[in-house]
Length: 457
Image 1 (cartoon, helix red, strand yellow):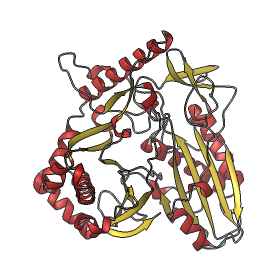
Image 2 (image 1 turned 90 degrees about the vertical axis):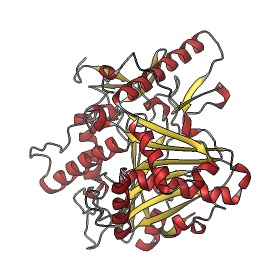
Image 3 (image 1 turned 180 degrees about the vertical axis):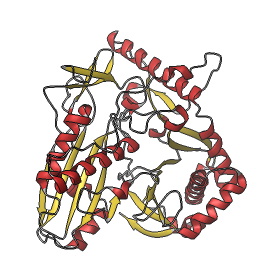
Image 4 (image 1 turned 30 degrees about the vertical axis):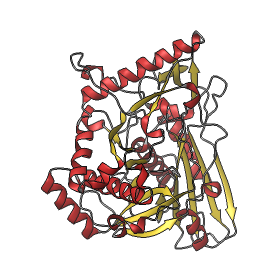
């Protein structure tokens, strides 16, 4: 069926997308340094967004639909579920607003969905939501944007943002009469990677776990402890030193940085509670394997996989960073096209079994991503350092600051660029956001103390 047909649909049940039924949010802060009138004119924002989704990103103006054989994204040529855009105007100065952004005040600055879980009863879940915050003083504008992770991941979201901002800038500068091609051609639907399947190879898949139905969930669960987000800053000099060390031991810069994070978290937690030494320390890197599988960066439902590595807490705390980096490297290296194909075949087979259990009123196991389950120590890392985050210009300049998705869950680590950062040259500091329980003081770790800058409660 073509994209211009009355109805078009594709499945999100043939890959890992349906395991992430939650909205992820970003907060973008733009400063109006010249106090220009019409700064982030709402008409241009809304018009460019609607043009983008109706003409180029039709699934974003579509619906999730749960069916007896899976979950689809369905969209139409004659009706649209346009992304909702809300606004507010606050009576506060720029510095106060900026603190709210840095503190990740999602309640104030980010749109909230009434529901995120895709069910037979709830098909009106927004794919993308936008909240625009203006100031009475006209000093700044903040964009709070949420997207549903079952449709997009971070890479495809920032491709979407690059297209939206470029289209808005064009409308603002030239009007809507001139021809304009968006810089990135979006594609949809999960790509066929069946050609990677090798029936002669059998793999274990510790990235997933089978649980009883009463333990199953489709979003991350907050624990009983308050989580504090700590921002570490890796200076240019520190990045160069880490890159050289990574080359010396045959791993990547990111793999070595992941090893520093995993070891540092383990050492702190073991010192606070020596009894967890024999318990599980679970590491995983949320890996985008597009390059390995030849998949376009523009595809929404992408071959994301969570490559795990497990040791005891005491083992990780005792190992040298270079040895942990080799463990991280090996975990990532095993994610070949063959492994990825096997992983999704396993996942789809389990999903079909769950559907059969439901039809027959049987109580069977359900599959979840292993990193969502509890463990004495977890280190779940996502790197966004190569995303074009600070190039997002809607016609009013680039952002002063962008806050990554706020994830108040124990053990989450996000590697994040600063405004001038270039992944190819490491010409500016790099930020690392670490989520840990409030009683865990990262400054007590020599590994973390060298990077420590400030905290967010």
